[in-house]
Length: 279
Image (cartoon, rainbow, N blue to C red):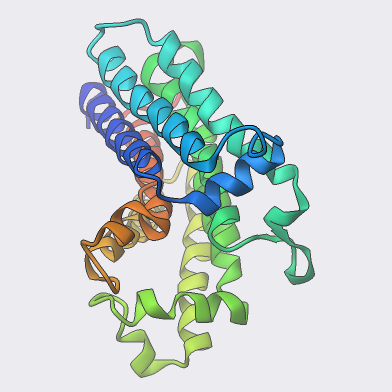
């Protein structure tokens, strides 16, 4: 995988994800997510949620086009990086609010909104790689892209060992042609434990492979991590109500589309660790 191909993959995934997310918010989807975010800043009392959705969606759509234009060198990348930083920072700062966490259950992020928020850690490292690759060393780029992958897999994988999360994923697992077989072998909690163990194990192995510069371990663990994020994309097609506006542009879609960023993170890691010796 040469640099041009990697850049194309990263740029495409960032562009399509922000265009879809922007369209979702602009269409007045995800009102609960917007309310939780902007109530942290006390803005929801000044402007309606619908207007906030249109504003947020417009910014994300603008970022999608800015990413594409900067990638083809039709505009300077500074604007795209600034947009990405602001769009990521606004929701990430709300992690300081207590209502984002389930302190009574080990401090995990709230299902849905909290899980979706931590995914924004993946964004800025991708823009730094795409437009400012030479400003950092390859090892720094690898670390910046690995941290969000490890964070989401360890965090959300760890949640799978709790009953509330095991029950929360039933509707997704039982309708998946790739995962429903787990319920024939295990209980609801047992299947969730297997999924969570898979996430945690291969996140740790990927970290070990990077630290040891072990290409075979990186390939095996990287493909396993990739399978997690590819699997979530299939939920859009086989979950209850698949292909409906509610699935594609509301809660599930808003949550799953963000996993495209992690596919891009893994593409960056693969490029730097497997196809280009880290400096």
